[in-house]
Each structure stands twice: as C-alpha cells, then as structure tokens.
Length: 279
Image (cartoon, rainbow, N blue to C red; front, side):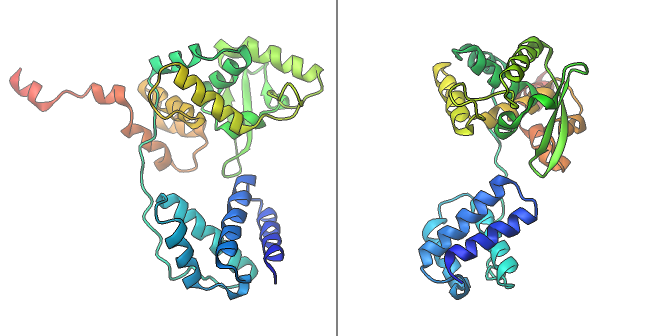
C-alpha cells in the first residue's frame, strides 16, 4: 500500500466515524508528516521510526501536540493495518495551562479599537455568547429564533448541539443582518462580502489580534481569548458553574472548572491572613 492510498483510507475511516473536519485535518497532517519524514511505506514504519520523528520534530512542542500526534498515528495504524505501533510509547502528562483572559475594561477597549460595524458585531457576538471561532463562522440564519430570542449552535466540538441567548444589546443588529442575508440568498449570518461564501477563521483571528494591538492590550489575544473571558466574567457575576458548562458546551465539568482558578476579581476579594491578624 502506498502513502496516498493509506492516507485516503484514513480519511474514509475518519469520515465514517463522523469526526469533525478539524480532527480529519489534524490526523491526516500528522500521518502525512510521519510518512514524509521516514520515507517508507506505511507497513514498514516501526515504533522506532515514530520515536525518531518525535525526537526530531516534537521535542520542543507542548504535551498536547505530542498526545494529538500519537492519537493520530494510533488511529491510522489500528484502523487500517490492525496494529498499534505507538503502544509502547509513553504519553506525556498534559499540561494544565491557565488561559489568557481579558478584564472587562480590556474587552471595552478591544471593541473600541474595531473600525467597522460588521467586525464589531462579529467580535462582540463571540464574546457575548462564548463562541469558538468556527461556531461563529458556521452560524446559519435558520439557527436563530428571534421570537424566542435564542440561537442554536449545531454540531459543535464533540458533535454536540447547544442553545445560546441572543444578547439584548446586539439583538436588533443581528436581526437586521439576518434579514439582509436572507434576502441576498445567503444561508450563513456572516459571509465574505466579495465572494458571498463563509468567513475564514484565519481572517477573524487576524482581526481580533490586530484590534488588541490597536487597543494597547499587551496580552496575547486570539478569538478563543474572548470565549475564556466570557466564562470568567460569568463566574465573576456569580453565575452557577454548571450553567456556564452548558453555555460553553463542555461535556465534563472539570473542563469548566479551570475558570475558577483564573477569576482575578474573585481572587482579589480574598484578604491576606496578615490583614486579619493585624486588624
């Protein structure tokens, strides 16, 4: 079996298993990188080849990147060649990194640095609803229920649907845009004005990063920073963490609980024991 046939078989298996386009892309890329590095046919690749690739290409990467690579290779070899060439390779412990979060004042500064109304609406909606960037670009007009003032995120990460509230502050702008897009024959709420097709997630990432720089925010800001900020600010507003879990679409509460460790406002309320002692 040559490399292209092997990769095609992996793609077929991933699609049959209803994996997301992101999983398909990442798994194919990992296996293609391994095949290109080793320069052998798939059935000739050994555990030592995998280790050599990791030593040369992944030694400076985060644990999550290594875990993803090994998962991709394992999936491919178990599914297609019925063997696991990664079984004896130890997985690194996944780091628990505290994500970057913007303060409420920084969110206001970010919005103030966005030049166009459409860009401001997109970025505001990502923050207001805790969207992943792919969820914003995939949002369709039919997913919005203006009577009930809610929307539906369809088949998000983990193949889960969830409901979000359409923000009161953005309601009229979203409704107006939805009506315009429908009249123009577009199914998505946000489209490229030139092509009429869906937006590129990469362009949105650039838009957010550029706005943060113009606003003088020194933090490393991406679209996902808005999602982290959404969750943290809800927690600071005393919203129950299980409700935040549902709004974010987390399957496991432990994923949501990371925000209990990064709520600066809550930490600032805790007095030092020295202050209590001296008073």
